[in-house]
Image 1 (cartoon, rainbow over the protein chains, first blue to last red):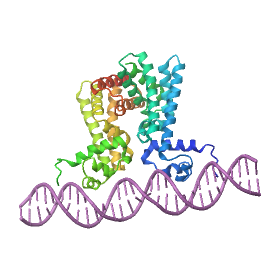
Image 2 (image 1 turned 90 degrees about the vertical axis):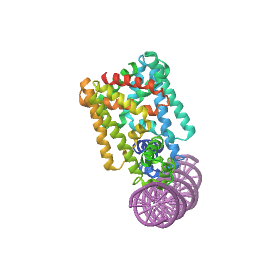
Image 3 (image 1 turned 45 degrees about the horizontal axis):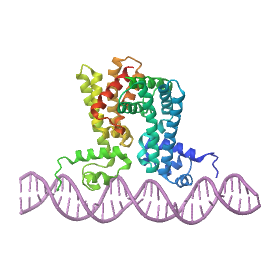
Image 4 (image 1 turned 90 degrees about the horizontal axis):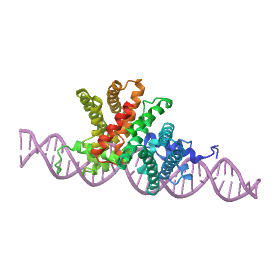
Length: 183
Length: 183
DNA sequence: CTCAGAAGTTAATGACCACTAACAAAACAG
DNA sequence: CTGTTTTGTTAGTGGTCATTAACTTCTGAG
């Protein structure tokens, strides 16, 4: 119908992630989500069962990407911590809205999909815990807490009104995170 | 009327901060805010002009407390960075919901009060930049970005399902933050 | 060319919400 | 006691929202 877009679903998901990041799940209406891709609100129901499912798909996609690629790179690299750091930093700097949504909106995802997202998040965290624990042996709670805190550090970039350009930000975050984890 | 509470305003603000932190500003209704302190929704209008003003007051209070006490302690201590770290960590571990609201809900505050909150946040950041810059001289953007990242690290605790008890968490965060800032 | 399915549209529908109005009870000053 | 102020209640009101219904238009296979 008129619009030439190849894949509407993907287009909608990208726009939705951006809006959800900026104004929060409850702060964005279906009408606005539609308007963001040049449609009316009800048109979205041709592609998604409802608003909640749209959010669920955004979060699932993020969790899968973060986890799968992180595990892959860590396994292939001779410096697994460096690989995890580089991957996570590149993802966070390149997709600030995805990081924001991933951090804030899990509670609005319907229960079954929420469980799956949590599972992936946990698995991603555990990958980090394995890698960091090997380099800096400690009680496992402490390693887990430390990794969690470093996620906070790396994920802080989206809110940074004070953004350095990514070329300068990336090595800064890498150095800080490494120092914090190995301290 | 019946209720013995000394200061209803304060009671409402505390309950509101908690609900806003858990479900987001748009995710909480006036009715729920009232019910959280044993009242009906409209009763809140005897104490606040509206929902937005309620949020504004929560955020203003947090910004003032963080800034004023931080500056005070840094000025009085022979180890200003240690003082800032201890203060911020104690505040974050002791008031997780306030940290969450402070980080997420600024956009929902009416413009005039938002400006004031931003001013306080900026001033608090600059205090850190001064202190950290003295210990680790660098271009100022880099110091600012580093401080911002450390805020992310320190503020990550509220989301931590993996919480160590505060007695163990506090020194861990202190060590990690110091290492990250001086790296 | 046609016609079926996909992808839109506008127009309800019912729920909820912030806020206001009108009224009532409590607290307290005199 | 009494009357005013404070703090609460219940009952609207108008607006917004997610979702559904009914109808239209585009598109591509045969």
